[in-house]
Length: 365
Ligand code: SF4
Image (cartoon, rainbow, N blue to C red):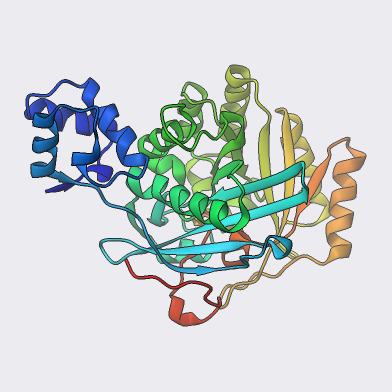
């Protein structure tokens, strides 16, 4: 028996072909599965013979959080974290980030993981020290959104408006599954229907992936975790910079913009005394001017046993002022949600037993 949601659409089409069934049935079945139907017998628009074959060969998994922390009350809406224990005993984390300015301006972002662990080894990130374990399946990626959406609907009566692939892992290295998830999350055939413009894929700068994204559907946004526009410095804390130079990255971003006509988000984590000086700000200005972009400065939250500190407010303002003088606007993202445990805008897993978060709900899978 195979888990239907562990398969991509094309893999499932191949499986159906082996059972003598036409390819178009695959998406019909997937639609039911992602609408929360767990029994093939309930898929009433399918022939009985197909339902029988499906029951004999597949089952449908359903992601259940093993741990949730955060506030249920809308007036105290704050970051909510979900910990998921996967079938193979691995853990991933998902974060809901509310931004409820007013009744008419309610933004609810879900930050999802794309891999268990990460091979990129960024020195400021707890996930980077875990190493890479495996890619998530489409079902595991979409399942995170399913759970978060249901939680938000139940407790806050609020739909998810935005999604970022900014959790654990490098999404460009699980590209097909991430993009298939993005299709399911945006398509009118499925229940999520998040707008393409409200989905962002964040990468450390896998150049080949940026070129692919430029040609791909759905047209989701691109964010780059730049963190330094000085080559040697970037290499010092982001090993990926040895693989792809800033010049290659810049060229890929220019090509992406030429194709997609979408501004790129430049994520810049401020590390005290490391990348927050005058020459760093000037290098960032130079880099950012090469392509239409928006800069997000991010506060760092120190992580145990990792020797980086948060930049002081005074240094941050000085850094920001240099950008402003150069005509570049930079927003400052407060550390919260996904940043709390990973600092760079990427999640870190850690055991529930660490007691770093207080339980709101505990369930078993
Ligand atoms: S910052 Fe992102 S890409 Fe770098 S190690 Fe952490 S999860 Fe991986």
